[in-house]
Length: 103
Image (cartoon, rainbow, N blue to C red; front, side, top):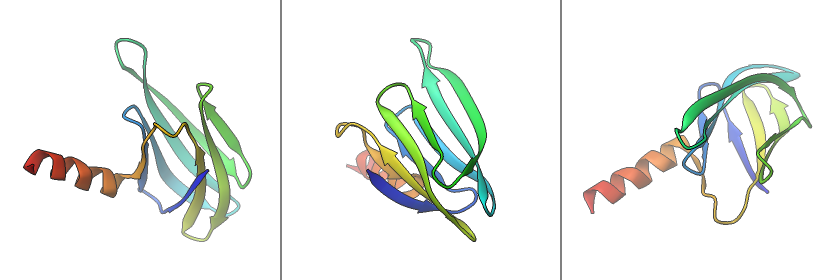
């Protein structure tokens, strides 16, 4: 499992088709939005949820998101995914894309 801490407005990218955004934090819960592109047409699907520490959300049958902790201004998020699925903070993903473009 990969663990990340995110603040309000920060995004985690899971593969090329899934993003998780922290929308709000009000201890003991956090408001999260999961966006996924599904189907052959890559139609967007969004789930907005209030989550408590320990809550789990499955995306398909291969990706699991776990709320590890909610601490003041940050949410600890754990992500279980197959080894071939990249998981990045949004700012890291953008740097990687910029590096690919300049090469």
